[in-house]
Amino acid sequence: MTLTLPRWFDLHTHFRQGPAVASYIKAHLDMGCAGALAMPNTQPPVSRVSGAAQADGWSIESYSAELLAAGAQTFEQLIVPLYLTRQTTAAMIREGAASGLLRACKYYPPHGTTNSEHGMPMDDLIGGEVFQAMEECGTILCIHGEQHALTGPDYIDAQHNAETRFYTERMPRLLAAHPKLRIVCEHITTRSAAEFVTAAPAHVAATITPQHLLYTLGHLIQGLKYHLYCLPIVKFQDDRAALRAAVTTAGQAKFFAGTDSAPHTTKATACGCAAGCFTGGCAPQLYAMAFEEAGVDLSGSDGQNLFERFLCLNGPAFYGFPASMQRFQMEKAASQTSLLETPAGPITPLPLGMGIQLSWRVLG
Image (tube, rainbow, N blue to C red; front, side, top):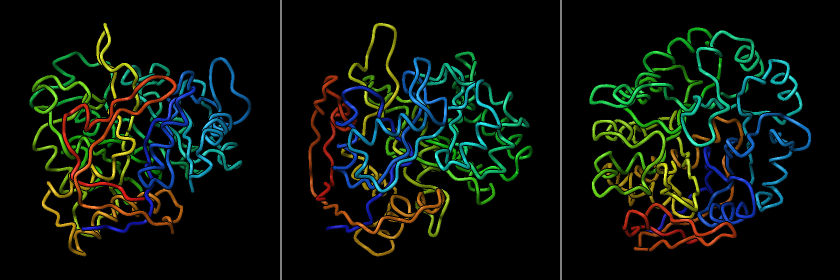
């Protein structure tokens, strides 16, 4: 079986900074990727719109130039969001949007994930001038949807976790205060989040990673497979079932691909495990496997249309640019992943870290 698809857009990924960036971008190009939304939680963060990089932060302009020089000029689309910090102003939003450089902003819960210490509480943004300016300009808000500063028992238990609390307590308030704000709920992991996005207005959408469609918390802790550790962490079977139902609903336009692929040369450290699964080079294959596990027959036109909608079409439509006219192919055939050798050191792809064989391969 062979699928011929439009080249797809990864609308949530990490290219980092430094000598390995070209390796990460090439891994995306090698898996049929036509473009990317590159996360701004670099070191230092992407906290300004224009100008040269400075010691305390990149600008969208300077970081984009870094990525383009490393191979991203081959992409049809490259979006770098502005990291929302206490230094972000409404004037910065309006000027950035008018210049064309600013297309999206990223909300990180303080200390909620890798390099998120520059973030600010959502409560400090709701009803404020920054979100009001984003509403006026049509700038998309990309949200890491977890409540911050929770104790261990509140962070995750059988009934609630940081994500369910965010989507039941913070998101309704956000929509009520900013009813026209365009929002992408990134890397959602729970039934609560999937149901919230489904019921929300058309200008609220979500990305879902391959690992959250494939795995559960049981996979993570059985044998402590730390290459599966990411934030938000994988959840329970009921949550995975809800995510699978969301992406495989006929005609759905709200859910699309965003891998949250995150390279780490050292995953396990003395003070804990670095958060992020690296799926560069293998994401479409993993997504195809997840669709099949969800019961989708990819040999038929209905199943292929569902997969194409999620992987290739919905994301560009929501972000307001055309789907790619270029094509790539995937073949139903066993394939292996290997270490990605980079100037910064080797990176372990998720399938290799999980000890699994892919059942699809990208032909180009």
